[in-house]
Length: 322
Image (cartoon, rainbow, N blue to C red; front, side, top):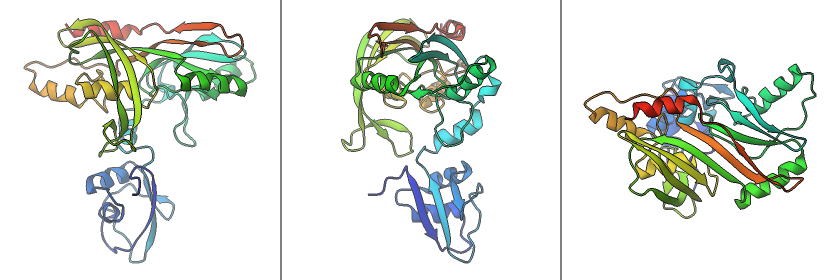
């Protein structure tokens, strides 16, 4: 079976038919709605030229069409609509720790951890190199160890050498490196402490979700504790045992407690807003922050505990939750 969320190359011969309709008919599992969104997101090209008009009529001759769904459609559309460039953010990062092996920064919300596609700009390694050049320093190796979602702020670690990257990656893969987050959620957990587990994979709409298919999903485990309860939600601490993409956001949304400000998995907040007799508060960002990173230093072996202070906007929004 062809994986829907991948790169597709098809030959279309339906002369005069709208591009999105022909695409939906040619790619197994693709709905007309998804095809329309893919075209609007700039993910479809004819003979190498991007076509962004869903109703673009196909020519009389057969054409080669590429449709790249490997990074999802919804995510791309949201980034185009809401994504603020790093250049618009006053302080895209703060250095929390730096030595010859590693650097840990407090990444601002809205900044990419690293490029997700070739040629993407405004990510932390690029900004770090620019920062070092301004200081008259040589911009050396910056190795990716883990990521934070674009709208998540907080602790983000990079390696300064390939050997440090290898050693740190082993810790993250074996779960001996601890990552702790704070978040404000809509809804209430019944328990004060809970371990969330299940497999995360792609849902029908392309977004990540809890799935039952053993082959499609990857095991995800998060330990969650309630710190404070409010009338309109709660403040939680979440410690990752595994590190799947969007893990905390997907699991909390599945629990019925989506993160405030989550435009991808926060549909339940929108539903509650429609039922509410008075307007619900609207955060200026997603209320998820990586507060703590704990790991063994790749050279000395010393256990390091690095914290990123909670942004003031969290306290301000918590007051609105009652």
